[in-house]
Image (cartoon, rainbow, N blue to C red; front, side, top):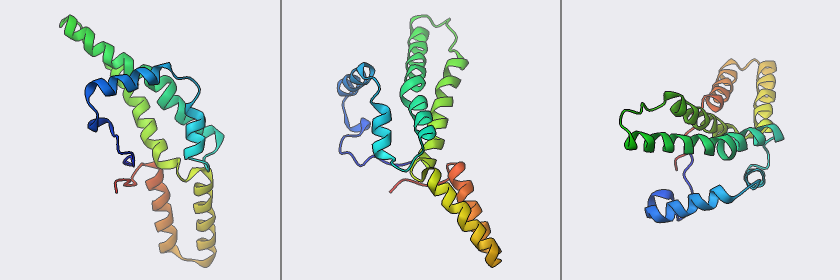
Length: 148
């Protein structure tokens, strides 16, 4: 998980400030793709579209639905929390987690590692091939540690 370099992280803000930021977020449109493109210049278009969808398109709606379901439970305790609503949010969070591991390298990073495997194979360096394959697996399994 990559930590923010910003001085203002959500936990440092008071609740009213966080809600103001959420209100601002809900009023925005079509800015996420540009922000992702700027932050991840090596990522292919397909990856950017998918990242935007899981975070700023359907991901936000899933988060709102989850919060609404929690509030409905407080209003009426007989209301059963909807596991489908929870799953929907987790689906987007998980996909963002996966893309967070892949976006920094983008398609070029994956292709570079595949090229490296071919070169190592022609050299017969089995240990280096295994290490490079494990690195690729780590990328796709989100095994990278982004905490500084």
